[in-house]
Amino acid sequence: MKRSFSWSSIIVLSVICLVMSGLLAVVNGITAPVIKKAEDAKANGALAEVLPGGTGFEELDISEYTLPSSITGVYRADGGHVFKTSVTGYSSGLQIMIGVNGAGEVTGTKVLSSSETLGAENTYGATTVGQTVATIDGLDTVAGATKTSTAFRQAVKDSLNASIILGGGTVDLRTPEEILKDSIAEVLPAAAGKDFEKVFLVEDLGEIKNVYKVGTDGYVVEFDGAYAGISNDGTVGVNNTTLSSDKLSAVPAILEASVLTDVDISGLEISDKITSVQKTASGNYVFMLKASGFGINGDAEYGISGLPIIVKTSVSADGVILDCLTVEQHESDGIGSVCENADYYSKYAGRTEGTLDDIQIAGATYTANGYRTAVSKVFEAVRKLKEAGK
Image (cartoon, rainbow, N blue to C red; front, side):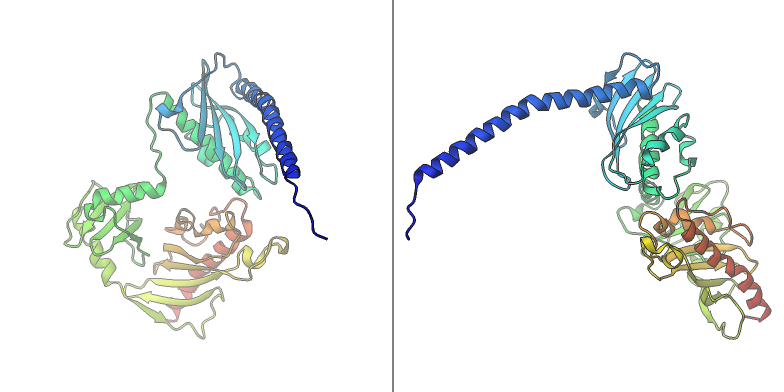
């Protein structure tokens, strides 16, 4: 049977849709201000809670200041400042209100919004009370909730720095990567805007802790928090009283003259953590290691990769670690994966046998223990290699 087309049905449905849309708009117009008022009340109540004794709270226009990016709002009071922050922990949208008094100390924190899973954000704030910009970096993270507590600590640090800025002080808000890039460009102008790479050290350069190679333009060395640029013709860009220009200008030749030769370790009773060994003409050794971290020994509930952490370590003939590098890792993202960061593996440089125990990763015991165990095997290996005349 042929169905008849009805314009009246379409008109009725259209009218119903228009009416419903109008009703929704009316309801939203009524409820939105109520919701906003409730949110404001919650925030206002938190102001006095995180800055006890503070009165006369006044919201500032933060567009007038250059503050850390996590700061979303600021209230000034006669007792200090309250900062609204938004950071990403295990999930995005971790919003925290933080009070800082006139002495630059944290007076209280309150979580306004969170999608974290373990609830560590609800207790971690109490540990930050009394912290200052000089002490906050030393505050431990929570084992098992590294991402949450790290993000919380960063929000507190940003608030402390913002308090200094609002008080008329200056704070370097650049990341360590930005500081390094700017420092390299400053001491070796030819490096500006160019890529550079950290040199893996196999020779003892004394006070020099890190060396960066900038293509064919030269090198930049780092020592005692300072930098010096060395162009290919040996010209030193920046110098200070601790290192002479002659010593600095000799660095490129030392690095480029260092040649590695393979060492046959078959027949030697050395740890199976050591997969290969090379030696320099000066008598130093370079080891490739496989560390059994969480990827091998972890809890199956969270997944085990079955793959080791690959570590490269250079050691002087007298048993001092010259450099260390994580070549490959398969640890838990954001937790054990910290072992691939330079600020972790660089802690091994300069260490000797029996001095590794304090090199930890908060919340990643399996990773840190496995890494440390593998590196510790190089000291005995050096002794056995020297005894064997290799």
